Length: 273
Ligand code: NAI
Image (cartoon, rainbow, N blue to C red; front, side, top):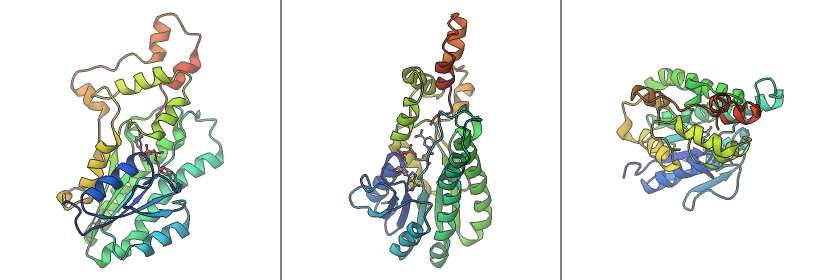
């Protein structure tokens, strides 16, 4: 099995991509320590640490529980979808950056001593395709994912001499509770789902397990030469294949003369999740 004998720490383990990654890592033979603020949802067989990832006490408890750390996947994250760029509150901006960026950095550096003690390790952070493509009404989230990309590139250079690989996975839209919450904020959730699916080359949402496969690969020794970034379900691939994106709901409404519902249009082309 690919993670036999390895101890892996996964944040966000109670839902979506983090939960699927914890299940997959267990199946691949790892001892898995799963961190989440939610007490329910951390899979059976995963050692639970319940707490906020931004809380120093949560970090200390998780590090203490692991006598060694071979892999760390920082998957916990929150979105700011549905909020216009000039409607984001200072507190909301700070919270998104605290959970998505600062906590990624904090968990990363907290794991370093244990990784160095055993000659190296693998760190996987979760960015987003939105970090490259941008989007609407989700500026705090998208900016935070861009920061993760830069952090990962920098850490990969800096930690390579210690035998520590650092990668980010940048998924497209993945069918998880986060995505569904984001979609439900759109005025026309069905139109938003259709538009978002059609931005992907495969014309569907990804499944959490499909991203978990990538996370586990990057945590494993199979990825020994893999460094810095991995992207999934590329939007650009759709262009390369010669497919054009469908008209957005905004374009459809205006070309059919129905321009009355601007809010629906704005929601449907939101940066999701
Ligand atoms: P999700 O909402 O299903 O799961 C996120 C988990 O993180 C939840 O269990 C939640 O309780 C936990 N969490 C959030 N804030 C926390 C905190 N402060 N302390 C402890 N736990 C906390 O979301 P999903 O979709 O599985 O997302 C996982 C990661 O993947 C996130 O970083 C997200 O930004 C990223 N992502 C998701 C995409 C999608 O379409 N679902 C696309 C691209 C990236």
